[in-house]
Length: 333
Image (cartoon, rainbow, N blue to C red; front, top):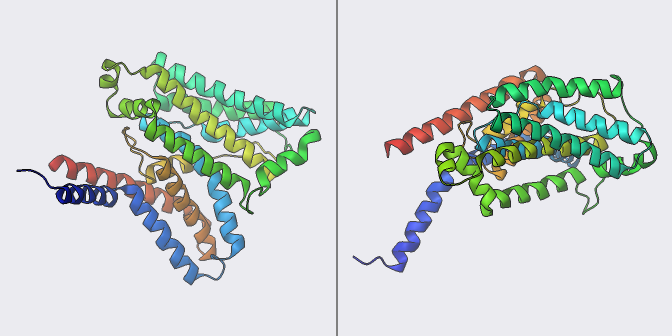
């Protein structure tokens, strides 16, 4: 029997609706929206301009790193070092600029440090065959130790002749009053989404996470792709470190402590599967937004901030359970 045009359109609409309703990212986005609506009525300070400005600016640092982390998780890997890499890259930037060099040289040194660390991760994991958990756990300690050595374990708050340029880079609002970190996050999210959706590199990333052996047999350069995604993950941490340094105006050796847990949580809550093969740039942003709304709401509702870990941990477990149930349902069908 011939299929009419109306039947084809209805089939596509049904598939699209099923895809949306089955998307973890969609339901997390709904949760963020409902939480914002509830907090707007439950508190007098949540919906204020100042608080919303702080939320959008605070979420950017986790979101930017979560974009890089999502690529790693899609390939079936993990990067536990991003918090320490952020600290080291921030410290390299601060120490170089404090020595009198320009902001361009400081940023170049910071980015080079991030890429070098990511490259080492990729080589050890893809070519030597070491487990990602072990490699990045080791770097977590090494990078923070190097940050302490570089600074003498002191606070850096003077950034040489380009001090004001750095503060404007991270703390300014150059376009329509929108905080610069938010603009950087949007641009990087669009770039990441484009790469994952429309490029061969993005297809290879998903292929490796879906079935690495099959990807190898079909000619995908698995090792090179793995090196690239770990370099991107470290690069995202380095970029976040540069931006956060300009926002804070000072660097301490405890900056970024525990950040890796928030970043992984953001990616997983946003729909990235730890088993690999699944994840989106939008999901990373939505997951980061939910974490920041949770963090912000605790203080506004008078809840002890020590409960933050419980809420975030519970969200991770719920996200993994949701993904597991979805996979079981698809396998049954």
